[in-house]
Length: 115
Image (tube, rainbow, N blue to C red; front, top):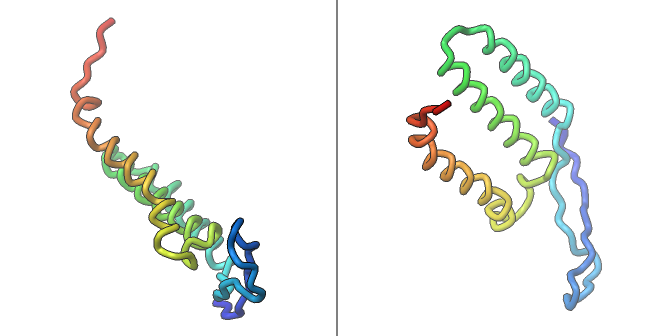
């Protein structure tokens, strides 16, 4: 993994002091390694579709999709290097939608179609 450090400077917010040299340094992620992990997870997703156990396939695909989304958010969106408050702001809609999906699951499973 690469351990070089990259300096990211952001313009000051309106009304904030414009101190020079303010920014945060973090190690540069190994993007090729992350790409390899994403490709491997995609290959696992394709392989899992050949199983006949439908609940296992669905649960596995959801798990792999969440793992891939976490990798993209952590490294390509640089959330791994941000303050926890920003991470909480980004993740809160995902958590709330998951809660809503789980709350609606009983209704979706017991719903019958009427033609």
